[in-house]
Length: 54
Image: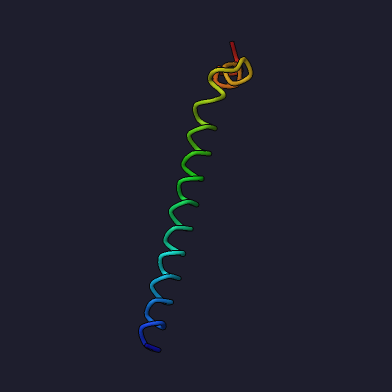
């Protein structure tokens, strides 16, 4: 029983770390996509994308 609890604890912490890593990666991807796509819809984003010398 003791070793079973020990293994279960290891599996749980591994799963928790994996879940945290996945959610962190998803949050980074979401932030990247939002920052890449959203400014195009605004006037500021369009001005920033144009070259300075017109």
